[in-house]
Amino acid sequence: MCLKLGSDMADSVTGGGLHGKDLSKADVSVNIYAFLKAQQTGKPVELYCAIGDDSIDGIPYAQVVEIARGYIQSVGGFEKFAEWGLT
Image (cartoon, rainbow, N blue to C red; front, side):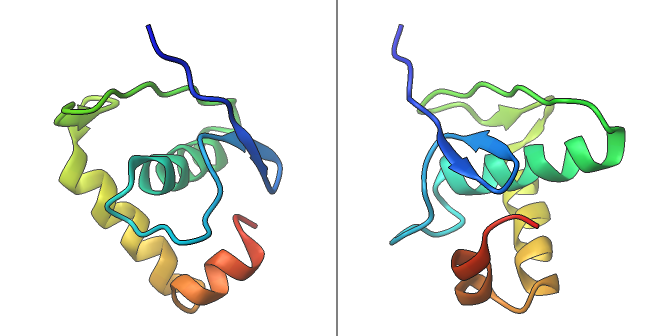
């Protein structure tokens, strides 16, 4: 079993920082998805994925990426998001 240490992003603990990353990286897209789900439910969210997984939280990984992309676009693009993180 391989564990990845989290890094702090806003009020959450995530799988990694944003520098040099893009939405194809699970530690960016899955973290955004988890943040949005936590905002909707008002509860902590824990998600796990491994290299090669094609779904996260019961939905296709491609859909998770599109959800994350929509959030990125809503905050003014990836550069603004990387500057301020999840808010």
